[in-house]
Image (cartoon, rainbow, N blue to C red; front, side, top):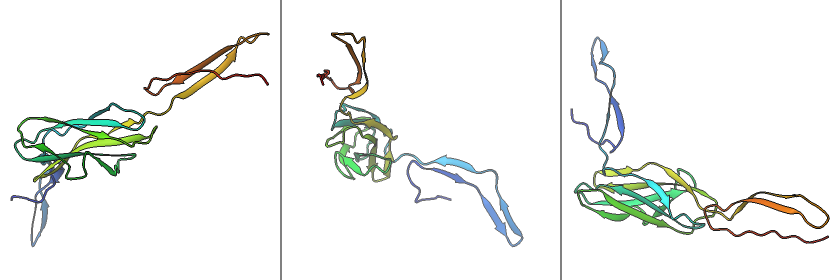
Length: 178
């Protein structure tokens, strides 16, 4: 019995049930199958070029000879909410028969915010999604500790530890008398 209307890349359980006027018989244990992905090999890769307010998202996909489009979903939770480079249906990935590297530049990010993102591709068969990954937009430097030691009559030792948050950072101590 052919079954249609299933979602691409989705797992299903199936079992046979037979019935007549005397009752119902349930077949052997359930069988699991997964439908093929609409677009092959959609893979979310780690974000690169992460700065205070921007990042680049990457990943390959394989159109497998069928015209495909792609976009990245991103946002502060797995609800995402934003798209790049374009809103669905997205940017063309062509119709080649081998993997295509794609990317999307993000701008206007909030410093210090952790973003969830994933690659999404679609064709006339449906939509395929890559795994959810995260990155944190860099933030201003973080002072982890600062201390004063070896205090004597005419001097002291000032010490500190800084997390530059993956950016070049300069530091200095401010001091003055009462």
